Length: 73
Image (cartoon, rainbow, N blue to C red; front, top):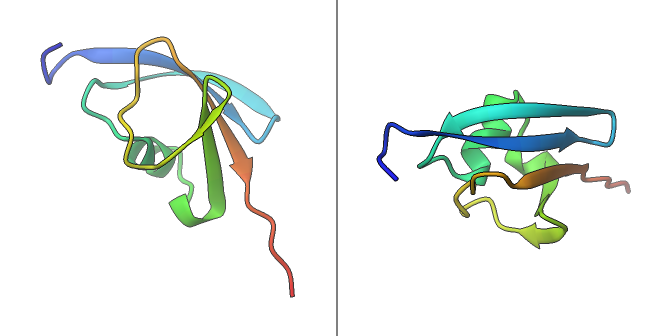
């Protein structure tokens, strides 16, 4: 894959909306979260059903689900 190539992924945003998103092949999960206008510290991300770190690269055809982090005190 060249750096200029776009990959397509499905993003499930908090179970409320599913979007197909095209991003550069070199995009990290953290970059994708920021592109969607969210903060990395406020979400847990799973890729194809497995929790992942924000440093992982987005893989073509993946289904990415964003889970809201709930905290209280």
